[in-house]
Length: 208
Ligand SMILES: C[S@@+](CC[C@H](N)C(=O)[O-])C[C@H]1O[C@@H](n2cnc3c(N)ncnc32)[C@H](O)[C@@H]1O
Image (tube, rainbow, N blue to C red; front, side, top):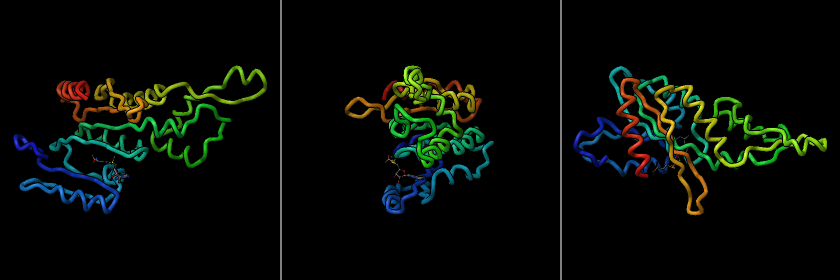
């Protein structure tokens, strides 16, 4: 917002929490067209009406955890106008997917949440029957070790949806204990701008 040389025409902040919206309103700058929307961001983005042939923008999805729905990502991809940064909530998802599980024992609430994030049940591919346990008659399933699997399933889905507009390179954001918190991902808006947009994104990712 402080860039006055070639600034954006408008800035839109979408925040569900009313008190935080009041705080955001204090950000108002002179001569800047700033809109604060007290709304669910999924709802807002899925119903965003613009003339997408003329409009371009940068979108930053900065959730606390698992709020961003796959249906929102699909809608963004269809606009072909928004260069989009996504913070994918690795640690929150890993907590919902414990290493060892009896088949189908993940709570329906979490299944629902995971399906909303991934858009389908593809996350179930992380589990496989533990051969040692099945030898003894147990059918316990084991999740792939680490966080790479749950990120790569999401990345593969983004690559399918955005095709060449998806930047495969990403950045893992970690806490002070060196544990992954979020994966920082980028997708290009307009197909005509793939080259420059990816170059800018790679430059930003390198510098984080
Ligand atoms: C990580 S914080 C964002 C911080 C902010 N981008 C910043 O740099 O200060 C996540 C914010 O998303 C808001 N939030 C959570 N779920 C939301 C939703 N479905 N729609 C809109 N805002 C939501 C929370 O109230 C919280 O303020």
